[in-house]
Length: 266
Ligand code: PGA
Image 1 (cartoon, rainbow, N blue to C red):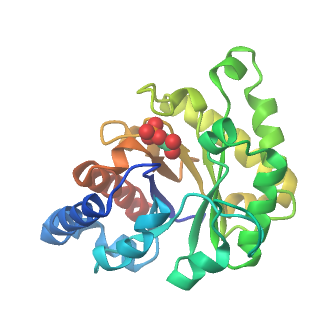
Image 2 (image 1 turned 90 degrees about the vertical axis):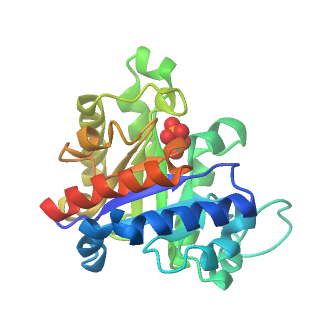
Image 3 (image 1 turned 90 degrees about the horizontal axis):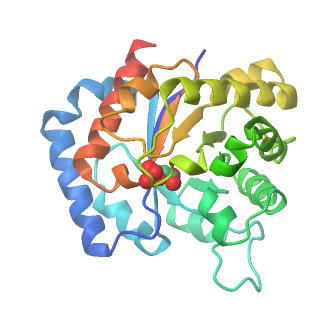
């Protein structure tokens, strides 16, 4: 198994320029000042990746603000067309021009509040992968769906959007149960493992055993410094996608340390 551990953060609609600057300054001091020392070998060997999905307006700023930190920044969404009459959207070439390589696709808030469907999510992922981006594709059931026993059916349907796109490399999946996002109700490590195993079996059906085994599956939904180790102890939890906990340099650093330890022990 050679999947990298990925510790991702999604700032959502948070982050002024001044806050972005102080976040990276603070994180840089903590990381370079010793907090990141034990996990540096995991970065050097490519066993761990750190990605922060920031608001578009601070992306350019983040590239200078992060200085030497081994963290990539990326966009929270992008359109499948490369340009045109799509008011309010961002294109791949716009992100590429800044030197960015990462895009988050189909976050549940895009699905819930902005009309993202399995079909539009699939088009975004396909186009962005063709343009050479790394895509983190989100799936997850609502509380109502879980209580109605539909978790697997929902995940299966959402994963179908990845038909023909999985490559075991640039397309990664985040399992984010909607009931755990921003609620403080984290899935238990066992619930996360069960869902991840199911997602992996669906990936296998779509793309075969080898690609399924190479595709990182991240857990998201109230992941934080306190629960990171136990979530990451699960064999199919290959990383975390944190919202709230990625806004604070000290808690994001502890997620990185937890991820680094998993990466170095594998
Ligand atoms: P949360 O958000 O960590 O604040 O629950 C996770 C996400 O929406 O990606």
